[in-house]
Image 1: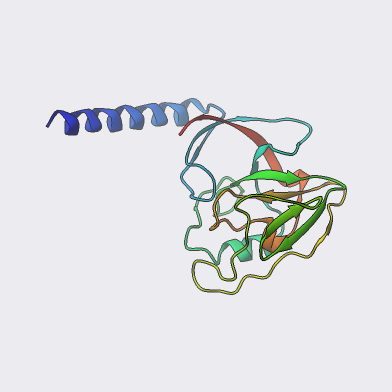
Image 2 (image 1 turned 45 degrees about the vertical axis):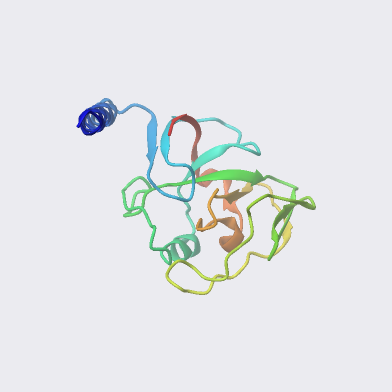
Length: 173
């Protein structure tokens, strides 16, 4: 009984904390998607995006949204000016890096990224096509989620740097 009460109090406290964060318009992002670790992130705007950064991205390409719509894990929201919420991904390649997507995984400058093997089909059973190999062009980045279910650059290619709205720092999760 004590455990149930503690869980209930914790849940209420979390609800009021998140409600307060939303009302105060703090630069905080709450990730509920499985493509990156769930949790609360601090959002900050930086002029330069670097390899390893976690980023909040609103893709301007309709192709990206079409591929993402194939997933049953799409998070709805208005953060990107439409009906979809921004995506959280990690920058794994930047300008001049050479990226190759193979069945074994994503290779950046001939180094394989762990746990990056692409899937052949989306969670809804639709076929997924691999992004072509090549150098990351100026003004673009290659983004990955941390889950095998993530729909990211493996399937849609690079993202515009201008689509990156902020970098994220994990607070807790």
